[in-house]
Length: 314
Image (cartoon, rainbow, N blue to C red):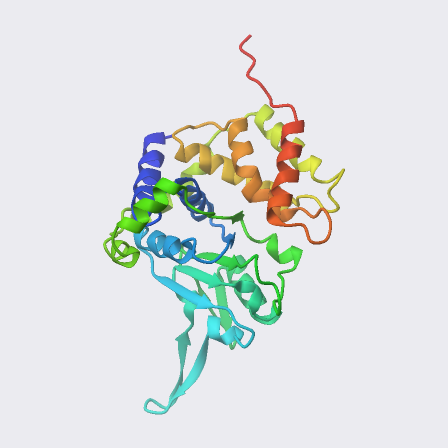
């Protein structure tokens, strides 16, 4: 297993995106892990923290096209998927693709659209294809959706059901910058100009190789057992609904990808502790009105209660 190739891939993408988004290397790497694993991101944060800029820069770095869709109550499924229209000049129907045919899509304030439109987005995410009037189009290999929710304003929204939230690979939050990074951003040029100067740093062949080989990372029986102890812990105690098998698979894949991008061909318990909050916190239910920070706190408390396996050097 060529671990250096994974490290180079990670450094090129994270380095390019970090030119636009300062001080958020950990979050950028987690978006990259989602991309490697073929998953999608649910981002919950206050406005103005760089969500759109992050995804624009990421799309440029991987050589993909970008589309931003502002979700509103009057947004229709066809506004996402596209429509068949009658071309009077040619005398036949033509398909006009919607924004979901881009590689990287920002679904801004996804909880403001109706459930029917949300379902159209989630179906494309899950099936990686779009069907309109009986004809099916596959979506590209770089297809990545980042859906955002504003945690401050919930009036007039349509919250995503728990079963649909479970389809997101990770839930992340950028948060505010620290003082030094924010001062650096204030003094530099326009972020739009910086993103415009970002060139693709990886090819489709690079991404295909990483996706095909990260599953070769070895996960010992002790580490896999530690992962399952954590999953089983969410299915009892304070949690009314624990992590599903889909969630356990997602965590296993995220741990392998994180280890590979760190230059290792084996996983550690620390990989599980790092990835568990963003992969599992949105998949558990511990009562009505549980906020993201509360869910992560309960989950990390559970992680701290489970004995970490240690290497037997005997």
